[in-house]
Image (tube, rainbow, N blue to C red; front, side):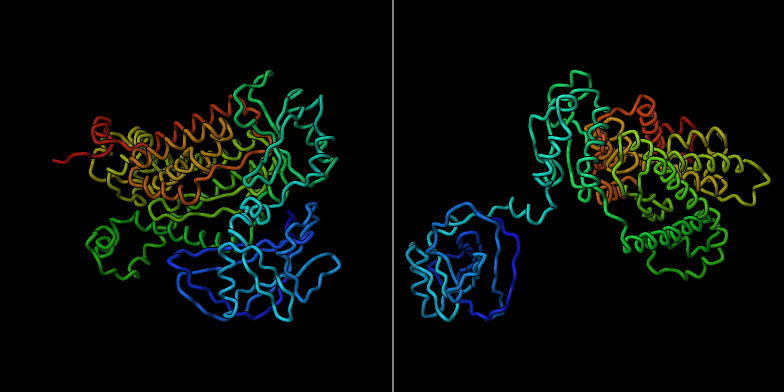
Length: 562
């Protein structure tokens, strides 16, 4: 069968009338295969329960196909307009249903007559179905996906690559399978004949010499492999993809616009957080509107303008932590020549922001690089946040800074086991065992920054924590960590009241794992794995709320008042 390669369309007018057939309530689609030498066309004919008549402008389809080695045995089904055939052996096919005069003949042909032949006349010929439609032609969905999907690797290049790259000294190919999301690539399976890192480097050099900058070669674990490599570690295979199909596309103008709008909204939510921190000084009508669920009529927002200036320091602190986080990612990616997208900040009125979505805009060379880039941002943001948090706690106990302090309920310190214990150690039992606590705005900025960093380090999807776990322990470990994380978020064990919105955010924006690296097999080393495990442990302590019994025992917040 030929392969459809191009079509041209010219307009014709015709009238389509469906016929009433017994008690058949179903719509039927009949595909008529017209084949002469190397041409292939499809005809559509619909039959419904009730008679519908309408006129419309449709198109005459001219279909071209590649050379076909099969002989044509269906000449009786060929349709030729004006009896002419082009020099290339391509015929024009015209779509038309039976006219009123031919309705009776068309109906009889539909139920079994296969003797009707196409006639040549001055007007478009009548197409009569022959035999059961689904016996004449079957729609191949896989062929359709090949036409609509990304371009597959050229078979000639596959043969060239097998001859030039692989062999006894590198990798002996025994089998080929589809590779990629849509099977557009080729996966070479076989036996490794040396150190995997050395072989991979040699294959990449040979690929560049043979095909230039045309393809990307991936070293991945052999799928469904039960045995390990005799040299240690998992068995490997090599995947080949077009460079254009495997690498992320550039950032578009609309993405820049969206990123700018999100950043402006994040500035607004950070200022709002600064205003909310001054709740004890806000006008009563404003406090009632934001705290009373029965309040309906909004207050005059101009009443908040005098508090904007005093809210800016806290807003600057939150925005500084966010930017410092992203700078950490870019500083780690630059030496590795890994491109990153602009950050898409996610505004949030409770924490100021949920962090940012930063995409990889180039393929990561190996898993160690993925771990380094993923951890650099959270470590940078956590370092600045913790500095603000501890300095703010120290200033909170300094009488000289009393004019800058804000009053917050002591119950807020029960939102985090780790941060509550640090606050208890610096401020003391008496300060936290009251109904309200006087703290410096830096404490709030540091608290929000550490909480946001901890949320982004959760080991799920393509969050920073998910990327780090996938790079350090593999995709299988990420699945296990992810299921556990989703369960704890769903039960409210991690994050308290923020667990539900954060879980929804992950499911919508960040649930998919990161794509594999070029070298997705080599281990990352012990110290990187230890750093990832330590980070996940601190994340759990940061997001774990303190229940009342433990809070009373530790003296974190006033649980009961008399």
